[in-house]
Each structure stands twice: as C-alpha cells, then as structure tokens.
Amino acid sequence: MSNRRTLSPQQRRQRNRNEVIAAMVEAARQIMRQHGVAALNLNEIARAVGMQTPSLYEYFPNKLALYDYLFRLGIRDMRARLDAVTAPTEPTAPAWNEVERYLTAYVEWAVENPDFFKLLFERHIPGFTPSDESMAEMYAEVEAGQRQLEALLRAAHLDPGIPLQQAFDVFLILQHGITALHLANSPDLPVGQGRFTILISFVVNMMKTAWQHAEEK
Image (cartoon, rainbow, N blue to C red; front, side, top):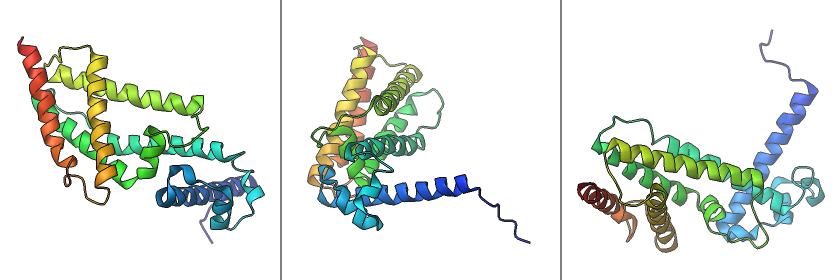
C-alpha cells in the first residue's frame, strides 16, 4: 500500500500554480540576464513556458506585477544569503571579520544574481515602482542591516564620530560602489579578483581604523 499522501483538488491546483509561477520566474530571469533587466516580454515568457500569452494574466495581471514579484524574490534571496554569514559572534573587536564576510557575501550574491541586483538597486525599468508591500520588505532589510552595524560598533567599543544613520550610509556607499563597479568592469571574475573587489579587506580596515581613531578623540 502506498504511503504517498493524496492531495486534494485544491492542493493540486495550488501545486500546479506554484510550478507555473516558478517556470515563469526562471524564464523571466533568463531573459533579464541575457538581455537586460528592462527586457522582459510576456510573449517571450509564454513561449518559454509553453503557454499562450493571455494565459499568463491568470498569474500576473501585467508585466509590472511580475517585476514586483521578482523584486520581492530578490530581497528574500539576498536576505537568505546574508543571514548565512551573520551568525552572532562574541562581543569583541574581531567582529570586524563579520563585516568583511558580510561585504564579500553581498558582492558574491550580486555576481551570481546580477538580474536581482539591478532590479533592486538600479532603476532600469521605466514605469516600474515597487509596491508598498515590496518596499516594506526592502525597508525591513535596510533596518536589519543598520541594527547589525550598531551591534558591531557596540561590541567593538567604537564611535564612528558621526550619527549611526550616517555611519550606515557610509557603509552602504562603499558596499554598493564596490559591487556596481565590479559588475560593470569584471563581471566574469570571482570576488577577490579584479580592480575593485580586491580592495574589500582594505575598505573594511579603513573603516575600522577611522572609527577607532574617532573613539580615541
């Protein structure tokens, strides 16, 4: 006798719906990687998943809704990657090693997912504005990052000499700048090679030295 659980008709419909959405997402991401984030075309997605274009509207009412869905997927994918490298550490100065791992993981995520990176942080799509729900997830991600930096500063007994918000903005500038420049100039090189990501350790040490100096004033 089979132990396989029998799905109800509603569960089968939901499973089938999820499978179609996953196929659409994969097709959309392939298009964005090959032709640019703004290049989504519902007709091309329909061909890729073996459907008629009007059938796609059962899943997304328009192309902008699909972009919004991809935006949220990108946030969650990034969060999962960064959560994996931000486990709690002992409250000592070596917590700066966590900053370097975090920054490296962020750039690695962007190199592996350039479509998500550009969708989230570089507004390439005319007419697309993330929904309130999507922006709420993005704000939550930013606030989580700021809390992590605040915990680091307290653990290492450092004072950046500027308000925490500005200190976090400095980190964002450095993080995004290194990532965007690497993607623009050396997208096929692994993180740690190329003109910009080779500087990750230097950038972290530069922040550490500057903020230690601020503490000594």
